[in-house]
Length: 204
Image (cartoon, rainbow, N blue to C red; front, side, top):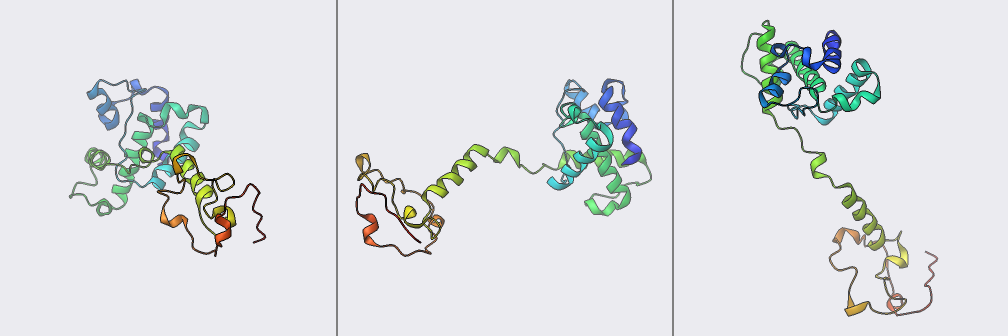
């Protein structure tokens, strides 16, 4: 990737001035009528999350240098072309590794075309779109509040509301909790379920 640093820096500084013929991602943006400086290029081929993170880290370390510039390249043309060039390097090193039809590895234009086809043909792993951080955090909190385990002690034995009796309309806070929240590693007693206005202490 080192020989590509200058072209990648040029793409970061003046993307409009670079030759679309040797930069497939730029040609793709232009074909859509998108701004080559701000348009999003969503293609990363079948590269793993780790490979993409490593590529982004390399780009920031050797090309962008300044972290403040991240918003100008992350998800945009410069890193997209870096991905293309990375695929080119993989194809030149081991043409059969990416399971593509035979092509002339000595023809730079053909290798570039094949790399771009690989980059756009495979749908990247959907990682961020399927994660709701707020929901995941809430689920972790609910598990801590409602799990039945030796660690939770008496507090985990359906104690919600026992200090004052049943909830309104006999609502059960534990209804629908996943079975895995019951670790079944603690023995309870019937006395723990008696309504009390006093705090139940446990020395467990």
